[in-house]
Length: 364
Length: 189
Image (cartoon, rainbow over all chains, first blue to last red):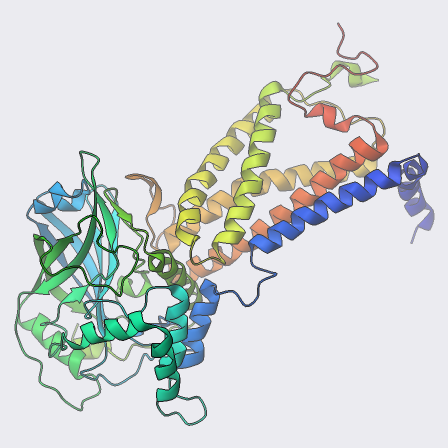
């Protein structure tokens, strides 16, 4: 190695440091850049490893359910559907979003069971979900992920993570852990109250005859610039019963047969909030006399396994919203968006195992 | 010496764009790193992150065009040849990242089947088909490039401050927004 050459490079760099004050200025530069780096890492959460982050929430799901590569970390077991939404124009009074102009837009969606186990057995008590992506004519999208309970169980991201752990089976015994659950409920009266509301709305028999609630409040902005708090839900048109069964996939099997037999319909109902109605607390129901606007009919006429449907690789992020619908001050909304994104990023980079609801089962 | 033929400063537009982009890029790096670790501020920051990234892409294109169409100031005589090579390489890396980061972000959202929302109803078309594996690879690339930009920014800031405050060769004068005449009067006509 040519040491003489290195000296030639370094001598002019070192020499100026002998000038009066030069070393002090060099130290000041170093300090400035060190502080900048520190602030950058602090903003990235490097100094607060215990903080509740999107990665921590998804990590909690993985701790409770195990890691099932390629699958959603929650609502892992599902089936994809397509169809259309036919707006009747009634939503225009609340929102300028193009979805509410009279007419038809295509949708893709997904029915699923809550929980992170992609091969879990269907049970009548498992929370069911319907996620929908509305494709607006100008290329905008509206994505919504709804479940079949009328209020949510928690009202903050921290409570969500804590409740997830408290409701999980004891890792040592694999059995339910009522002590942890009761301790959580004692600390969270809002959850205890929400569970009473949820129990007063018994689950329907299957996917097709179930309502699905968006739970969080949003702000609807109309052409006049008025902002209205709104919660929405999907009211089923069909009353077709699903017989309880011990078969592993009985809820999905019934849904597949129902969609093959006839298109399924839900009405999109906009619940109009009034000043003072809670928008930042998804555990609190709004008074039952709030105005309900029937905005149109969702039709589902085709069903497809996740193994082939593009909907497998769609993140039903509740904050993908068209112009005219905006988030409320509910802290769960941003947290859901962040956590869904984390789950999406993890599963999209993983090997994909076949869905429990296979192409063969769906018959398509 | 041929330096008398060269301007002592970058073109006025280049200098303005430099400081504007510096502020936006530092803000963008902090928004990005905070966004991915935050639940409560995630959506608010993401809403700023997307259009700001596209704004940086546009400014980078204007800046590159300005750089190519105007004459560049010479390096100060205090800079040895070896350091000039490093400085030129780091400038090329910075310009590459100005373009690569927004384009990878845009491509990543396209591959992830996301709408690329700017503001209101305004959104951009996808530049790639929706493909899960591609999304994951681009998402990781976006992070790696962002950290690389932060490190390159630190190195750039250190080099310029070292020249300006320790060597006191007036290197920063080439880029300050106001007009500077050199001691040798090179700017005089």
